[in-house]
Length: 581
Image 1 (cartoon, rainbow, N blue to C red):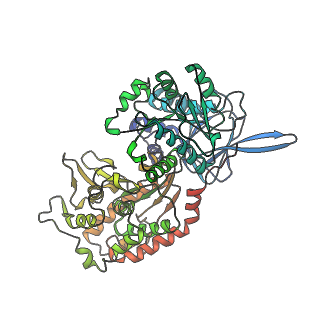
Image 2: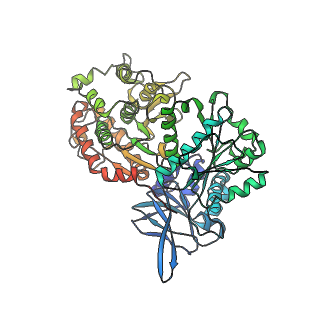
């Protein structure tokens, strides 16, 4: 990489799900050929009928696709779809040399990476894994826009639902998933059944179509009739007809399997149905059958899955910054009060601590009350247990561990009320590590181990973890690489312009070390927040990183800043494309 602009594009590309697993060389290659383009609200990216000159990737914001139609003497616009962070534009015209089928315009401030067509085609040849992923998107778009179509939808997503152990429950799941998709987005969804025993019924029977098919050719013919009319097709599959099951699974973009994960081999399943090409993709989603037995857990889990399927999940990224990070508690209080549905949280350093407490089900008010014991620096020092022989860090961290265990206990990530991702750094490999299984307290200790100040966290196999802020001080990318398209980020790193006490003349050795550490982290934060939809930076003036006894001031600031941004947050949380097609 030759300059900071290329570095910024590299970072943005790395945060996108489809590109995150590419090699550094491939991402650098793409970054050098991409340019960043910004759109304002209602500004057109391209118009219907224009030749395709670029391939586009949405980095941030939303883009509306619309079709212009002439009706008698009037020209009307009809919205056909909204694409968000991580989605592609111009893929059909780039691959097929056809003009753009739709026009595209920003729905607000939008950031887009664009790659010239010639560079893009060269890139596809160079990176075959990317070509495979893009071909899936291209297939969905082409299936939704056949030559004789009036182009009502952008793409059709086909989801197979499958269970060997409980076919009846799988059918209920298919119906409920379809229901939830419609309720969340207003998009069209239908459940298709072939040669299946009808045991379950729906209040709206029109959304379920059952067919008896004599052979796979007839099945494909029937299935094809729905591809350009529905945004989502849910295939309720019957396992005992191998040929038909294989045919439908190969027509699907995703397969949801309800089973006992301990007895299920994803590789064997894919090989059995000639799906070898999906071995390293996100095609197969395996869900524990036991999580759907009880009515309450059934509803909760289907809701969670449907939010993921439709791109409605909301992620919250909480950054590191010691006492500055206490402002995040104030943000959580406002999100709770306004009933903003946060689905997944990622946290670094202090953000991992605050985020984990909230993800475990502890209300923000109780988290705030936990800070009230820090009345003075003396109270804070009670948590500080100096290492007798400070070879690896001044503070051992045992008292902090006891503090955390008093609230979280020995809970694992799987036991959290909300999904949680905690960022740490493998110091020997100098790599970011995203922790999402095992002990939550251990993960927090790993993420908060500031080098030199705290002892590093060492695993049983000898891996040495230090503060996650070393590699990712504002962990937006840990959400985007999982496909989360709606992200709120809260920065806790003071910028050079922020008026904080780090500017005092008589700084201690620790002040100099910590502020130098945070200065480097802030530079990384500048790249991270570009991928978030709502960015907040509640930095308290005339404060310092160690002033935990001023928790009330930090928290009040967090509340105020979040309230100032609540309109944008509500729009992000609840606004979705409601289509009547």
